[in-house]
Image 1 (cartoon, helix red, strand yellow):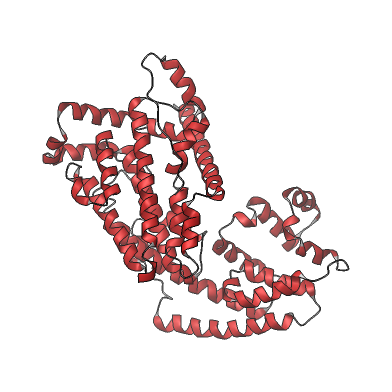
Image 2 (tube, rainbow, N blue to C red):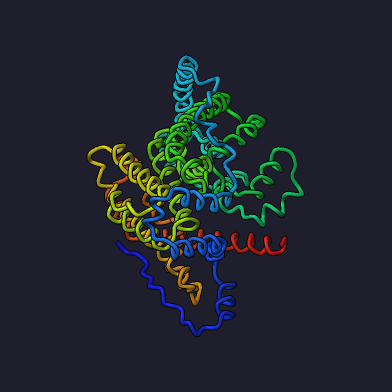
Length: 463
C-alpha cells in the first residue's frame, strides 16, 4: 500500500522564536487548532512531572479534573438523543405497507412510460424525462430503463434540433457566467431554478435534499407527468422513514460510547456525520454501507479529538500502540475515559465485521490498515507539537496532514458496506492511494485549514 512518508525533524534549540511564529502564520489552521489546546497540554505535562501515570490511574478525581478542563471546547449537539426516541406518526406497518404497494404500482407505470418514450421521435421529451427522474432521486429505481434510454439518446443527431433540446443535451455547458448573464432577462419558474443553481450548483448539492426542493418546482412544471410526481412524493416519504430508522440505530450506537458521561471533550456530531454520508449514497439498498461509513467518520472524529484535546504525548503513544495491535489489554496505563473509548472503538470494528458476509470479511483488513495509518499520523502531529516543530513549507505540512484529514480511510470505508459492486479490485485501487484520493485529500485539507485560519483571525479581532 502506497502511503505518504514523513519524518519530522527536531527543531533546533537555537532557532529564534520569531522564526517559529513567522512560519506558523504561513502554515495551516490545523496547527492553530492544536495550539488552541496548549494550555491543556501544559497542564497535563505539569501533572505528569508531579506524578506518574500509575497515580493518575488510581486517582479518578485527578482524571475528572482533566475532563472538566477539556469540556466546552465544542458546541454541544442540538440533536442529542432526539432520533433515539423519535416516532414518526406515519411509521406504522400498515401505513408503510400501503405506501410500498402504491409505490410498486407506480414504478411499473413509470417504467412503461420510459420504454414508451424511446419509441417516439420527441428527443426533448425523452431528455427531460431522464433529467426529471434524476433530480427527483428516482433514477436508482429505473437504472436498466434509463441506461437503455441513454444508449439510444447518445446516438441521436441533434444538429437539426431546437435550441432547448441542444441546451438540455449539453447540460453541463451551462456555466455560471452564462447563467448570471441571462438571469435578469428571465422570470417565473426558470428564474427560480437559475437562482437556485447559482447559489449552490447542482453537482455540489445533496441529491436527497435537492429532490425535496425539486418536487415543489416540478409541481408547477407544464410538462409534468402526474404519476412521476406521485412516485417522487411516495419515494421521498419512504426514504425519509428509512433514514430515520438508520439514525435511530446510529444514535443508539453513539450513546453507547457514552459521549456525555465519559468523554465530554469530544464532538457529538453523529447526525451531521449521517447527513454528510447521505451525500455519498442515499439509496435504501446502501443502508448497510451508509451505517458503516457513518460509524467510521464518527470514530475518526472521536480519535481526532482524543489526540487533539485530551491525550498527553505518552498516552497518545500507548493508544496508538493499542490500535496497531488491536489489543485493549495494552491500555492498562491509560485514563479510564480513553480505555472506555478504545474498547468501544474496537467493539465497533468487530460489529462492522459481523455485518459483513463471510466472503466479504477480508474488507475489514483494509479498513484496519487505514485506521492504523491514521492514528500513527495523529500521533506524529502530537509529537511535533510537543517538540515545538513547525513544518518549513506547506508541502512538508501536507505530507502528514493529508493522512490526518481522514480522506484515505473514508475512501476505503465507503466501499466496506457495499454489496457485490465492491470487489477486491476496488479495495486494491483505493489502497494504492490513487491520484483522485490524493487530490481530494488536498482540497479538503486546504479548505479546512483556510476556515480554521479565518476563525482564528476572527477570534483575535474579537479579542
